[in-house]
Length: 536
Image 1 (tube, rainbow, N blue to C red):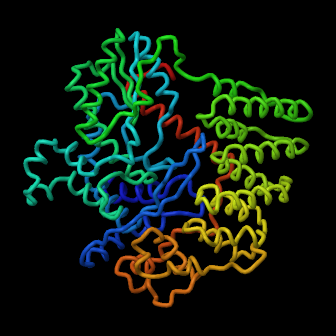
Image 2 (image 1 turned 45 degrees about the horizontal axis):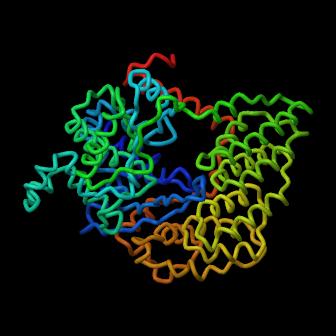
Image 3 (image 1 turned 180 degrees about the vertical axis):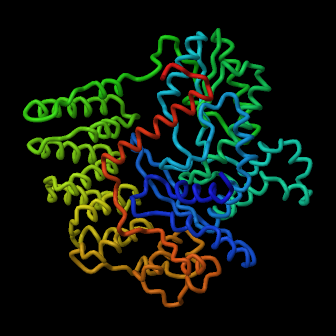
């Protein structure tokens, strides 16, 4: 795979967070990457940019702040990684304890595929079979606390970088220093933290993690076969508890070398009798749902009843999301569809992190011509908007708006005007799309969003709205701010768009087929690395 192909994969499949609704795309940027970069080369100076924060729900009333990075900085960072991929891959591939080394994938949904967690569970079980005690730990707020200056420390050693800190001729030729500068360009020159969402951050974080692990191995003198790591999660096997406790200080020291800290709450020596994995996933998988009739109704009732019980017992686990995804492979009979639907709606209300998969299922059912009670769905949408708009809960809002688009539900005035005051490009573009489709019962007041239609916003948090609303002609641009911008005008001339009005959720059958293919590919990679034959 050449440099251009690697860049295409990073821009097309590794740019936007996967939690965004389907209309948000980057394949046009990837398609015209070479021409865009050539024209950008003629522009003097690269501006610093800011990314937009996109807040999504996690279990336990927690939130995760994802990043919608600016295309100027993200394209240049992706190019640097693509151009130097062999060196990067050699460095991260030098780890003998990483269970999931980032690897660019051409035929999967993301540029950097996620691992098969069953393989991780088996590796932990294998470690427990060899050792009486297991130290488990992770790094506190890993992405959010990464010090970008440590990228060259990891790649080129801390001593080398410190001794040449004032030697620009040396430092500027180092790959690590270049990555440091480019990632800072995309976050207003901030040195603390890297954006969560783009797959480039997974690569950058692995560089840091490999640096930490090498320091830990040096300090501890442990054999590599008793240690394994997935991103920032650590597992170390010991023959006695005392050795395990002593190693904590060494791991702390290794982290501190890179300006990071262990998560005290999650650092512990596991009891030998503690189960390797929780039972609730297997229980849900083994619950039978018969194909039709009254029997299927009874099975669905038992299944969802148990799923809600398990969700109550495991507040910190995304039980409902997992349970609903299992049902996607089931053929729900027409006579039981209403019962299935009300359980989905209940799950979306109880657990906001399941809203996305519920929306995908309902839209798929509707496209199949299956009867959906749109009145109940509209109430869920309106209730979600009312409870989330003022709090800036972008993930729930965006999927509620997309659900209205997918089911062609007209939104009442009270709901849409609350969205109109939300500072979110994602929610704004979805709302403007609903307006275009005639799915708003009243005039949409766009005055707040109009305030971002200027040149300064193109390098600020609301860049996506400032560009896309101009490109589509959805909001007026009195000063023609995109056409006069040295970078974004190039995108517009190449007809690059980031919102595809016709793009929808994948069909359930296609999504399940792709998931099975990706799982098989990930398992094959991990078996090859660790010589597993257990899963064959």
